[in-house]
Length: 462
Image: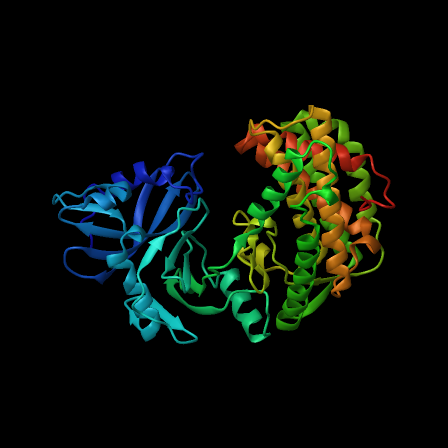
């Protein structure tokens, strides 16, 4: 058991600086240790610690692997949390490959250590070194050699994490568009076995979809006179392939988890929630108010549907940052769903076009984000805005075409549903950007302005 003298004070100061800590906007009232399991003895030692962070009436649990050394080497100075009462240094252990190898060894051996359960479903090489990915995200990823990537879920929710649950289901369905799953580890949390981490295939030849799309947009802006389909970095063929891969994964999800129906009454309830979000957002961001009428019309049209809708498990937080292009094609990642939602909400079936709408919004972000971050391109503002919309429209259409031709629900034949989902996502983005990245607020507002003037028929036409 770690010496707790000063540790809680150190964590109160350290936690708000971490990207994955969800309570940055609230004061920490106290921290208590839920479990402390020593995985490596000696100097250095590794303690797997789960803490409860108390903030007002809410309490969240976090996974914080802690390394303890009598003297911290220079290579780990950036990971320091502070000094314990006995003079030892405590630090974020995910950055210490001398300690993190124990997770790999324990998964390979399918061992139990105290409340921790380590499991693998295929052979694992236990001797690979690790390094922590520098990517800013809501979890922490450890890359072992060039073979595995282990995602540690920092903020914990009792029960199986949807990412692990879906990955197991897709593996059994033989899905070709998701990384291979190798193992995971769990712990009892509030009487429920809960996922702490999962380890999957590391896509060493992969390139992030957001990066690829951004390169294409930059190529377009660098050419003063060429259209989006004339630029060497045209992304439309990849967007179409991505649409096809998305349809394949949706089909695999339906096979793995089954399908259901959303009744007209349930559809109206979904539309009511969209209306509520719109009203709340207009109060916070008055710039959205001029478009409220067209948004309301889109949500009303959804509410008027009088036939049941198909629902199934979906990705739930789908955008260009959740896909990678590899030598063998597009791969879909991170089926955890929106982290801010409850586990029940993230596991709930939804209409497949909700994922399609998420990707369409991501194309708009990819097209516009370079215009608001201070970069300079040839052409005046109006011309660049036109080119951004041209790029987005071309890739939106290509994605939907690929999705439909691969057997997905044809977005062009269900524009009422798609339009409502996309507008609802854009309203969510307006609130998010207003609260977190005000300089990015013109992106969703500009998209809403452009999309809201289009006729309901031909909504997807470029």
